[in-house]
Length: 227
Image 1 (cartoon, rainbow, N blue to C red):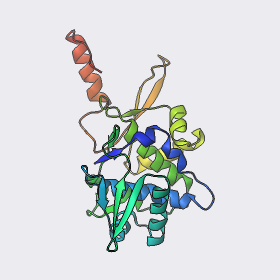
Image 2 (tube, one colour):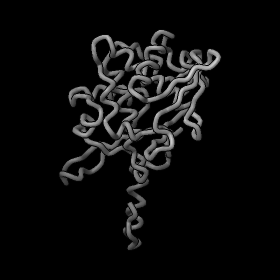
Image 3 (cartoon, helix red, strand yellow):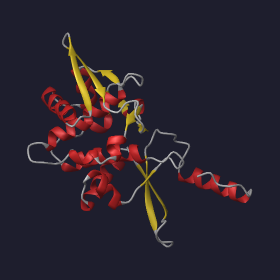
């Protein structure tokens, strides 16, 4: 599925903060955003999602779903229209420049539940930070490497997550198989390494090993490397 990402690259994830009395609703908002994106018509940007579908997919109560949807609307991430007691949600930015590939079907258990979200209890800032990281990696994924090559400094800049909290959020994503971390030579220090974050289920045949091998083959053939 295609997720509009211009708002993420503009720092929009920083609005979803772990504030007193609001952190749980901000987690619920990003959970609901994922469900809406998975059900969005790519041409119209609209999704018809029932509360039952939100419940099955996220494991959230109806009260938390409502709170999450209110946050998305407040932050301008979607527009909500209700006709004959049926709600339609339109993602902001569909059709504009900037989108990221968002895995869908492989994330669902039994076709209804998003496995990754079933253990969330909305009581930990790490859950919010993990979702923010996941959306950031979707937005920053390079099409040549199939990974997001981004430093902790840039992660903090785009998301507002403090450096000391990034590792625990990453661990949550890795434990649930939502992100793979590749270690690659640093562009800053020839003796160092940096991390690249790869989203499973998106072009699984393209990873650091295959892209490095392709570069080597082109170099040995005397060809220009196009990436």
